[in-house]
Length: 253
Image (cartoon, rainbow, N blue to C red; front, side):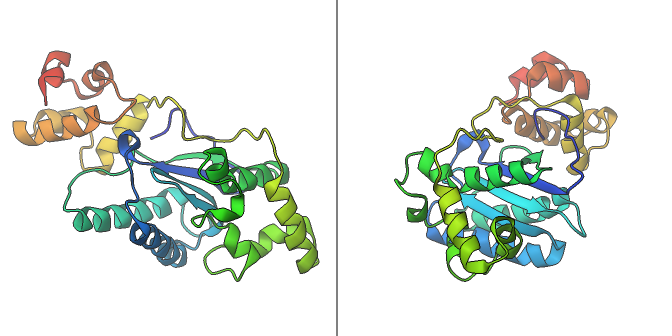
Protein backbone atom coordinates (compact mmCIF):
# COMPACT_ATOMS: atom_id res chain seq x y z
CA UNK A 1 0.00 0.00 0.00
CA UNK A 2 1.94 3.04 -1.21
CA UNK A 3 1.66 6.72 -0.52
CA UNK A 4 0.33 7.60 -3.94
CA UNK A 5 -1.40 5.95 -6.87
CA UNK A 6 1.03 3.89 -8.84
CA UNK A 7 1.97 4.77 -12.39
CA UNK A 8 2.41 1.53 -14.32
CA UNK A 9 5.69 1.48 -16.22
CA UNK A 10 5.82 0.53 -19.88
CA UNK A 11 9.11 -1.33 -19.41
CA UNK A 12 7.85 -3.49 -16.56
CA UNK A 13 10.99 -2.57 -14.59
CA UNK A 14 10.54 -1.46 -10.99
CA UNK A 15 12.56 -0.39 -7.99
CA UNK A 16 10.89 -2.16 -5.08
CA UNK A 17 11.25 -1.61 -1.32
CA UNK A 18 9.94 -3.89 1.42
CA UNK A 19 10.28 -2.39 4.88
CA UNK A 20 9.89 -3.89 8.35
CA UNK A 21 6.73 -2.76 10.13
CA UNK A 22 7.54 0.31 12.23
CA UNK A 23 11.07 -0.05 10.83
CA UNK A 24 11.68 -3.17 12.90
CA UNK A 25 14.52 -5.55 12.06
CA UNK A 26 13.61 -8.19 9.48
CA UNK A 27 16.99 -9.95 9.49
CA UNK A 28 18.30 -11.04 12.88
CA UNK A 29 21.22 -13.05 11.51
CA UNK A 30 22.84 -14.37 8.33
CA UNK A 31 20.55 -17.39 8.27
CA UNK A 32 17.62 -15.01 7.81
CA UNK A 33 19.34 -13.21 4.95
CA UNK A 34 20.21 -16.45 3.24
CA UNK A 35 16.62 -17.58 3.62
CA UNK A 36 15.37 -14.42 1.91
CA UNK A 37 17.78 -14.97 -0.98
CA UNK A 38 16.68 -18.59 -1.28
CA UNK A 39 13.07 -17.39 -1.33
CA UNK A 40 13.88 -14.89 -4.06
CA UNK A 41 15.53 -17.61 -6.10
CA UNK A 42 12.59 -20.01 -5.68
CA UNK A 43 9.91 -17.53 -6.68
CA UNK A 44 12.01 -16.07 -9.47
CA UNK A 45 11.53 -19.46 -11.15
CA UNK A 46 7.82 -19.52 -10.34
CA UNK A 47 6.94 -15.93 -11.30
CA UNK A 48 9.53 -15.66 -14.12
CA UNK A 49 10.62 -12.14 -13.14
CA UNK A 50 14.09 -10.82 -13.89
CA UNK A 51 16.22 -9.61 -11.00
CA UNK A 52 18.88 -7.01 -11.79
CA UNK A 53 20.06 -6.18 -8.29
CA UNK A 54 19.23 -6.41 -4.61
CA UNK A 55 20.34 -5.07 -1.24
CA UNK A 56 19.37 -6.52 2.13
CA UNK A 57 19.57 -4.00 4.95
CA UNK A 58 18.66 -4.79 8.57
CA UNK A 59 15.11 -3.48 8.33
CA UNK A 60 14.38 -3.19 4.62
CA UNK A 61 15.06 -4.67 1.19
CA UNK A 62 15.76 -3.04 -2.17
CA UNK A 63 15.12 -4.88 -5.44
CA UNK A 64 15.44 -3.86 -9.08
CA UNK A 65 13.17 -6.22 -11.00
CA UNK A 66 11.31 -6.65 -14.27
CA UNK A 67 7.96 -8.42 -14.35
CA UNK A 68 7.37 -10.97 -17.08
CA UNK A 69 4.75 -13.73 -17.00
CA UNK A 70 3.31 -12.75 -13.62
CA UNK A 71 2.73 -9.28 -12.17
CA UNK A 72 5.40 -8.01 -9.84
CA UNK A 73 2.66 -7.47 -7.23
CA UNK A 74 1.88 -11.19 -7.20
CA UNK A 75 5.57 -12.12 -7.17
CA UNK A 76 6.35 -9.85 -4.19
CA UNK A 77 3.28 -11.15 -2.39
CA UNK A 78 4.57 -14.71 -2.81
CA UNK A 79 8.07 -13.78 -1.60
CA UNK A 80 6.96 -11.78 1.44
CA UNK A 81 4.34 -14.32 2.54
CA UNK A 82 6.82 -17.19 2.32
CA UNK A 83 9.55 -15.34 4.22
CA UNK A 84 7.18 -14.06 6.94
CA UNK A 85 5.79 -17.57 7.49
CA UNK A 86 9.32 -18.92 7.96
CA UNK A 87 10.47 -15.96 10.10
CA UNK A 88 7.46 -16.18 12.42
CA UNK A 89 7.99 -19.92 12.89
CA UNK A 90 11.69 -19.45 13.63
CA UNK A 91 11.17 -16.70 16.20
CA UNK A 92 7.88 -18.00 17.63
CA UNK A 93 5.98 -14.86 16.73
CA UNK A 94 2.72 -14.01 14.97
CA UNK A 95 1.50 -11.11 12.87
CA UNK A 96 2.90 -8.84 10.22
CA UNK A 97 6.59 -8.35 9.57
CA UNK A 98 6.54 -5.97 6.61
CA UNK A 99 5.11 -2.44 6.63
CA UNK A 100 1.82 -2.73 4.77
CA UNK A 101 2.33 -3.37 1.10
CA UNK A 102 5.64 -3.00 -0.67
CA UNK A 103 6.59 0.32 -2.31
CA UNK A 104 7.69 0.66 -5.90
CA UNK A 105 8.58 3.13 -8.60
CA UNK A 106 8.68 2.63 -12.35
CA UNK A 107 12.10 2.65 -14.03
CA UNK A 108 11.53 3.56 -17.66
CA UNK A 109 14.84 4.86 -19.03
CA UNK A 110 18.36 3.47 -19.32
CA UNK A 111 19.75 6.48 -17.48
CA UNK A 112 17.43 6.09 -14.54
CA UNK A 113 17.93 2.32 -14.54
CA UNK A 114 21.66 2.88 -14.04
CA UNK A 115 21.00 5.45 -11.30
CA UNK A 116 18.79 3.01 -9.40
CA UNK A 117 21.33 0.23 -9.91
CA UNK A 118 24.04 2.39 -8.32
CA UNK A 119 21.74 3.74 -5.64
CA UNK A 120 20.77 0.25 -4.44
CA UNK A 121 24.34 -1.00 -4.39
CA UNK A 122 25.51 2.12 -2.55
CA UNK A 123 22.80 1.88 0.11
CA UNK A 124 25.11 0.37 2.78
CA UNK A 125 27.78 2.93 1.91
CA UNK A 126 25.43 5.89 2.28
CA UNK A 127 24.13 4.39 5.52
CA UNK A 128 27.78 4.43 6.72
CA UNK A 129 27.75 0.69 7.38
CA UNK A 130 30.82 0.19 5.17
CA UNK A 131 33.44 2.43 3.60
CA UNK A 132 33.43 0.61 0.27
CA UNK A 133 30.55 -0.87 -1.71
CA UNK A 134 32.42 -4.15 -2.10
CA UNK A 135 32.74 -4.62 1.66
CA UNK A 136 29.04 -5.31 2.19
CA UNK A 137 28.12 -8.96 1.78
CA UNK A 138 24.39 -8.66 1.24
CA UNK A 139 24.09 -6.89 -2.11
CA UNK A 140 24.19 -8.29 -5.63
CA UNK A 141 27.40 -6.43 -6.45
CA UNK A 142 29.41 -9.61 -5.87
CA UNK A 143 27.43 -11.44 -8.55
CA UNK A 144 28.62 -8.87 -11.07
CA UNK A 145 32.25 -9.40 -10.14
CA UNK A 146 32.18 -13.14 -9.54
CA UNK A 147 29.89 -15.83 -10.93
CA UNK A 148 26.19 -14.83 -11.00
CA UNK A 149 23.69 -17.12 -9.31
CA UNK A 150 20.52 -15.16 -8.70
CA UNK A 151 20.91 -11.91 -10.63
CA UNK A 152 20.51 -11.36 -14.38
CA UNK A 153 23.84 -9.57 -14.73
CA UNK A 154 24.36 -9.96 -18.48
CA UNK A 155 21.54 -7.60 -19.42
CA UNK A 156 23.04 -4.91 -17.19
CA UNK A 157 26.65 -5.40 -18.23
CA UNK A 158 25.70 -5.04 -21.89
CA UNK A 159 24.65 -1.48 -21.05
CA UNK A 160 28.28 -0.70 -20.28
CA UNK A 161 30.01 -2.59 -23.11
CA UNK A 162 29.56 -5.50 -25.50
CA UNK A 163 32.99 -6.69 -24.36
CA UNK A 164 32.51 -8.61 -21.10
CA UNK A 165 35.85 -7.65 -19.51
CA UNK A 166 35.43 -3.99 -20.39
CA UNK A 167 31.82 -4.08 -19.19
CA UNK A 168 32.80 -5.34 -15.74
CA UNK A 169 35.58 -2.78 -15.44
CA UNK A 170 33.25 0.06 -16.46
CA UNK A 171 30.54 -1.25 -14.13
CA UNK A 172 32.99 -1.25 -11.18
CA UNK A 173 33.98 2.33 -11.91
CA UNK A 174 30.39 3.48 -12.31
CA UNK A 175 29.07 1.78 -9.20
CA UNK A 176 31.67 3.52 -6.99
CA UNK A 177 31.20 7.03 -8.37
CA UNK A 178 30.11 9.69 -5.85
CA UNK A 179 26.70 10.99 -6.85
CA UNK A 180 23.54 12.81 -5.88
CA UNK A 181 21.18 10.11 -7.16
CA UNK A 182 17.64 10.59 -5.90
CA UNK A 183 15.55 7.43 -6.00
CA UNK A 184 12.71 5.82 -4.12
CA UNK A 185 13.89 5.82 -0.53
CA UNK A 186 13.01 3.99 2.65
CA UNK A 187 13.08 7.21 4.70
CA UNK A 188 9.68 8.67 3.82
CA UNK A 189 6.45 9.58 5.50
CA UNK A 190 3.96 6.94 4.42
CA UNK A 191 0.34 7.84 3.82
CA UNK A 192 -2.08 5.30 2.41
CA UNK A 193 -5.07 6.17 0.25
CA UNK A 194 -8.58 4.91 0.99
CA UNK A 195 -8.31 2.60 -2.02
CA UNK A 196 -5.10 1.12 -0.59
CA UNK A 197 -6.84 0.37 2.72
CA UNK A 198 -9.82 -1.18 0.91
CA UNK A 199 -7.41 -3.31 -1.11
CA UNK A 200 -5.78 -4.55 2.09
CA UNK A 201 -9.19 -5.48 3.53
CA UNK A 202 -10.10 -7.33 0.33
CA UNK A 203 -6.86 -9.31 0.49
CA UNK A 204 -7.75 -10.58 3.98
CA UNK A 205 -11.26 -11.54 2.93
CA UNK A 206 -13.29 -8.44 3.82
CA UNK A 207 -14.86 -7.19 0.57
CA UNK A 208 -16.80 -4.19 1.94
CA UNK A 209 -17.74 -2.21 5.04
CA UNK A 210 -20.85 -4.29 5.67
CA UNK A 211 -18.73 -7.42 5.99
CA UNK A 212 -16.55 -5.98 8.73
CA UNK A 213 -19.55 -4.49 10.55
CA UNK A 214 -21.18 -7.94 10.66
CA UNK A 215 -18.09 -9.70 12.00
CA UNK A 216 -17.81 -11.10 15.50
CA UNK A 217 -16.63 -8.25 17.73
CA UNK A 218 -13.39 -9.95 18.77
CA UNK A 219 -12.43 -10.84 15.19
CA UNK A 220 -13.40 -7.36 14.00
CA UNK A 221 -11.21 -5.76 16.64
CA UNK A 222 -8.24 -7.91 15.66
CA UNK A 223 -8.55 -6.68 12.07
CA UNK A 224 -8.95 -3.05 13.12
CA UNK A 225 -5.99 -3.28 15.49
CA UNK A 226 -3.82 -4.63 12.66
CA UNK A 227 -4.81 -1.65 10.53
CA UNK A 228 -4.24 0.83 13.36
CA UNK A 229 -0.70 -0.46 13.78
CA UNK A 230 0.19 0.28 10.16
CA UNK A 231 2.01 3.60 9.95
CA UNK A 232 0.17 5.94 7.59
CA UNK A 233 -3.41 4.78 8.25
CA UNK A 234 -5.38 7.13 10.48
CA UNK A 235 -8.30 6.38 12.81
CA UNK A 236 -10.40 8.94 10.93
CA UNK A 237 -9.65 7.10 7.69
CA UNK A 238 -10.58 3.72 9.19
CA UNK A 239 -13.86 5.11 10.48
CA UNK A 240 -14.66 6.53 7.07
CA UNK A 241 -13.92 3.27 5.25
CA UNK A 242 -15.44 0.77 7.70
CA UNK A 243 -18.40 2.77 8.97
CA UNK A 244 -17.32 2.02 12.55
CA UNK A 245 -17.11 5.06 14.80
CA UNK A 246 -13.82 6.74 15.64
CA UNK A 247 -14.45 6.33 19.36
CA UNK A 248 -14.86 2.54 18.98
CA UNK A 249 -11.72 2.22 16.87
CA UNK A 250 -9.76 4.47 19.23
CA UNK A 251 -10.59 2.22 22.22
CA UNK A 252 -9.29 -0.94 20.57
CA UNK A 253 -5.98 -1.98 22.11
